[in-house]
Image (cartoon, rainbow, N blue to C red):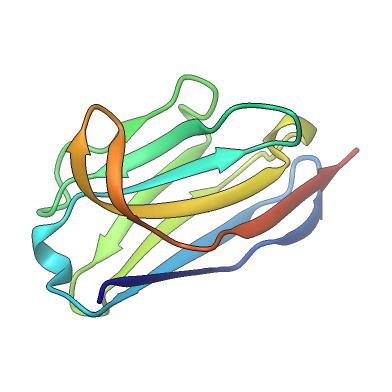
Length: 119
């Protein structure tokens, strides 16, 4: 059974940085595209970034381009989301997802980690 566990969230100030981690278990990590999504209070789920199984061609949502970087370490079964120059509008629960089944649709999801950015 595939499991995804996010970590690294917290409370930071605007302009700060955070690195989220997503640890994968229960399957063959290296064959999956992995993505990050987020959901802010009262808003729909938003695509943040994705990375292919080889690490090539990362894709980003428009609101995070130039500030966030997704990467993966297949030896550690982990995907990272480096978030720089955080803004209050980045406040959300961040989820990682694995095994893309369609356009920004994924089969497996983690429980999420809260990121709160204050002024």
